[in-house]
Image (cartoon, rainbow, N blue to C red; front, side, top):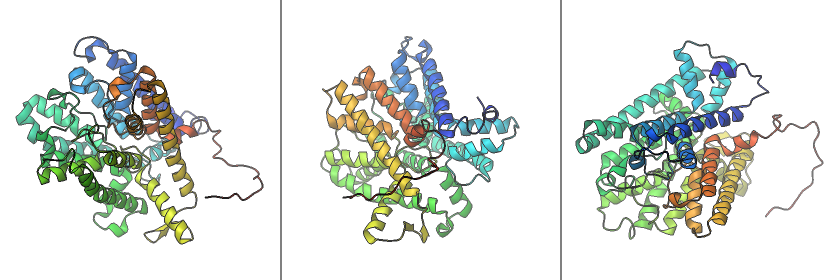
Length: 456
């Protein structure tokens, strides 16, 4: 399947949500087949269909939940398969296909440009091909810089070959907000919780930067590159995304430090506490790495982490979640309602009327899916605690990848449920729901009579 073949279909016959769902389905299927091969596992035995499917889904949907430690279970071949799934899933397969079409000097028509516009979630179809090139080359540059910085620490510790590969793997995984790592060579499922890693400013700040750049959104990239430091010239979407991202970090850091100061952070030097607090409010949006075990944090920190999972990154990025602009719109609507303002206003602009409807739909569907997933998993495995299951399913639907450790103990039904939530989280729960609509955009030839109801 390429962009040229998509042009053959009538616009009404296949919608963007269907293309995305179908494309990710193919990507996951290919990944599942490759990971089932004996050559992918260190013991030379196939892991079986369900475990391969779960891993391929987690990698393609840039989540990071795993049933096996990535380093200890998978061979170099298997690790490369996972890495490719992460890269393609993070950028979006349509973006990759468009770039390959450009390399082959194929013409990108209006239909393909429209699909690309949806894929990178930009508001303008003009210049979409140029933006796609910026995304590909920008990604390569950022991931390369991240790998170089990480290799400064990893090469002396692991050797040249392993150090370079580990740096590349971690850089791509962090930028794509995937949460996969190869630190199992030191301790199984340890992520970055080793004192050697979590106390190193170079490692922590590099990964935090990669996560943030990947989750801020491609449209914001282009805006920042075009207007440099002139914030007032940014598009409204960019302003909201940047401000919400900064506020979440500023608010979350001291809260996590307070909640964990006498728990997981106790006994650490102050600088290490700051680094861990910073990392622990950046990674839930939606990277999935850990510098402290999610199983050991307080209930307050668990709730804070889930809240940050729900928010996620920005639209048109490698991150999942409801998105920063979605949450901003809902909060602004609440403020507007309390003030009895005329419309939703921010930065001297008024938002379009239907934006609240869409934002509310996205957040509501995400939360409902998480609760239904929790109900299924708790019903199938009543021995699991509600706290752990809630953490797991929100991590899945918001493509985060953090876990309290129950992933490996999930039954087949629970694994399939969580995998489906990861798929919905990457495709977009609202987009997936639109697959089953009749495609008329909800237009009606006649409207029903209006009647008031009491609210609140």
